[in-house]
Image (cartoon, rainbow, N blue to C red; front, side, top):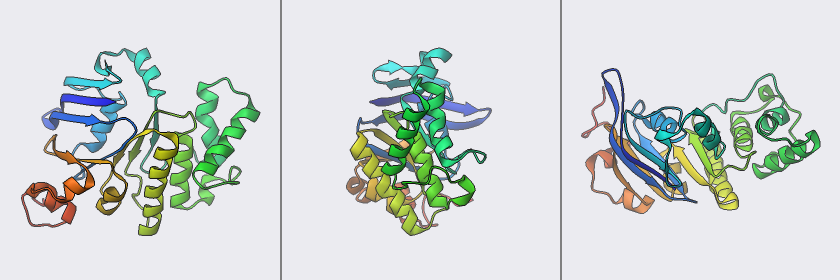
Length: 248
């Protein structure tokens, strides 16, 4: 569904992506792992068209989006839903209003129809009946789930998750991971997840890709990644300070 071909991106003298290649299969959960500051979020922004590469092609459904104009990119983004790292809810809006926001912006549905969808999406993330609560009344895990309900409100084809378990305890992290798998299965969406949570990654991913020094150094199934002989990958998934990845 998505192909990144020889992607290069620098910010001044800082080379972030350096000939990156990655294929993302339709209807699967692909998890991108790598060090903090290694370019994972930059990669995600390329996929949704928020950043243009210095060189290379990004094919989505066979079309190179690097050649799209702003109108075409805005139309493309309707294919996407995104769960931000901190959920990014509007503090002044209720839960229901937060989820309704993209529906009000991008559809001509009546208010009653929108609220029906809001309740349906809350049910899908296990939060029935909280549409009148404010974000300040929610736990971190609940905020993430409300953010996910908003992300799926327009029934996107592709869901992007930027560190979905950051700041959560292990039990809630596992719950969010299970929810990603459940949503992917029920809605048959393509999921791209950025994560440092190796344990969770191995549980939810169909495919794992390791970003290091601006390129994907290895990709494969969780079993293939666990059994890889790549010393950089093994150091990262084992969480060891000693190895080819230097701790600065």
